[in-house]
Amino acid sequence: MTGLTSSRLTVYASLAAGGLVAGLAFGRVEPVALAAPFLLALLAAVVGREPEVSVRLSLDRDRALEGDEVQATIELSSPRTVERFELLLPLPPELTAEGGTARALLLRAGRERTVELKLRCERWGAFSIGPLLVRGRDVLGLRSWEGSAGDAHSLRVYPREETLRSLVAPLETQVFAGNQVSRVRGEGIEFADLREWQPGDRIRRVNWRATALRGSLWVNEQYPERNTDVVLFLDTFAEVRSEGRSTNDRAVRAAATLAHGYLERKDRVGLVGFGGFLSWLVPESGARQLYAIVDTLLASDIVHSYALRGVDVLPPRTLPPKALVLAITPLLDERTAAALLDLRARGYDLIVVEVSPLELLEPDPESSTQLAHRLWRLSREALRWRYEQVGVPVVTWREGVPLAAPLEEVNAFRHLARPA
Amino acid sequence: MGAVAAYGGVLADSLARAGSTALVLAPVAGVGVLLLVVALVHGGWGLGASLWLGGATYVAFVVHIEHRVDATAPLVAVLLLFCAELAAWSLNERWPIRADATLAWRRGGAIAALAFAGLVAAGLVVALSAVPPDHGLAWTVAGAAAAVGAAGTGIWVARR
Image (cartoon, rainbow over the protein chains, first blue to last red):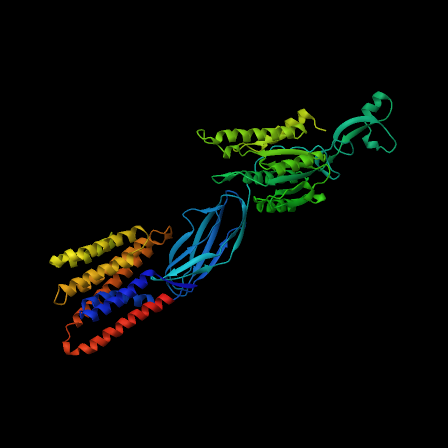
């Protein structure tokens, strides 16, 4: 620990020295008497010793959801009494503690003290909690010893998921078994049609009622249940942030929700973080993939970049054929717009979920920026129109509206538009 | 408020008995009060200078006006120490930190104990001044040694 002295101590020393010198110079006892209490204070400071405090920091868990409370426990003990022991647990802005994380307490010799702090997880992210900043002081605060103590602990705060009643069904299915009814016929449960028996058809597929009516063997055809590939395309080029709210936060929340939803249906889900920092996960299924996606999402932050970037830079396996690409974007960066149009041109089943930044950018009605704001909104409309022209549904997810609402819009769009 | 009251006590003791010299001492005392108020408002800046001016006002009074040993010197010394400690305590309490209630009691007790010990020590010094003047050389040497010791201790503590 680093020893520090109060500036008061220097003043006391100078006052004491000055009083003694003045006493000598003027031949008077009063200045010496004036110096006496300050000399005593100096002596009191000199006898102070560096505290030997054992500090142990622990968290009740290392994973939490947005909005949860995590309890941090700090156990302190010292072989000698520390008159005033101060501690501070530095926290990232995404975590808060009621009443702050600074405490001052008396540590009696040999007695253990426990400090419990309730940390509220305000926003998702991967954080390192600790070490603590500690300071031991003498009773008058003339001398202190500062340092850091305790181990660092990692805390992962996962985004709270939205409730979804249904997901957007991809147009194409893959070859593995899943929960999605395929559009092609084969072995399955869902009835599709009747056809005449052909050599090789199994007897159990014969529809005896139709056979009896028509006088020849007819068999049932079914739609098989297959899995699908879904790629979540997260735009991290730019965001709009205001008063602790941001488009990226909501985009991450949406991505986590969708990943969970599709993986529960046994689909394969991949992730592309498309921005200044490029990240990707090849589509896989299972709980392990969910954790991988969420962990990748926790690290997805807005990194500004001027590099021109297209989908060519992505590894081919990241975007498998017939995959549904769900782009979650605030539609703020031209590079994402171009990349998404490129994906559509390559035949991907593309859906754009626009995380609306408009609620975060209310222009001052008196200000001249209103015109600029209107132009900017018009340019966004034009971009949406470009997507719709190539058959890409663009739905706007506004703040305060459940994610299910724009997804239902997509389903309605696909039902009416019947995209190829 | 306690710090200002203690400081006011030091100045009142000097100025009330200074007679016409009070007019000369008053500006210095006024600057001292101003510096103390500034220190209390602006986080401690000027506290040392304020203490120095308070002490200097009293020393100037006793050197120029009082020809006998001033019996109130221990009280003035303790008031000056009180002023410094209470001001520092007030500044420390402004930190946004949740503290045990016992800490305040212990600090208050420590300040009181230090003040009492200071009063006894200063009173002892004043009492010892009544020693016959033929022992003057020994006391001069003791005083010089104490001054050097105090300055040395201060430097040692500041460097740690």
